[in-house]
Length: 174
Image (cartoon, rainbow, N blue to C red; front, top):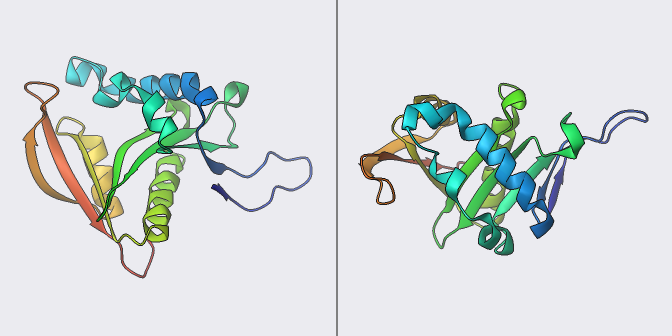
């Protein structure tokens, strides 16, 4: 599945598109994730969980989506989103935006894509979790309509606290 924007005019770049990642994209996925989360290395005293993830199984399962068609060196994606489909909800494992693309609506576009995927799957609930120290992310998700549902210890990282968040879709998109 590809989500294409408006057609590009002759002589312009193609409109940004979101496409399913392939195994050939693994190096770009790893690099983009590391650069997007690097801002949190000092805050967390370690790499964020998505930075240490093995993305090969997620790509094979069809969970990784790339946003392309924006001005990036060597055709690298501007952002990515990792979506897990569950019986009663869509789980966002990671949203990563290239540092030079942050503040340009890339994250919003990826969240809107997650909404569309949930609707297409007949789901009305999206869930995610983030680190309690990632206050900028918590604020962004809250502005987008997510609400905090709880906090819990991160079983993978002693001392880290996960913030669980949820969003219920309505007939009116954001």
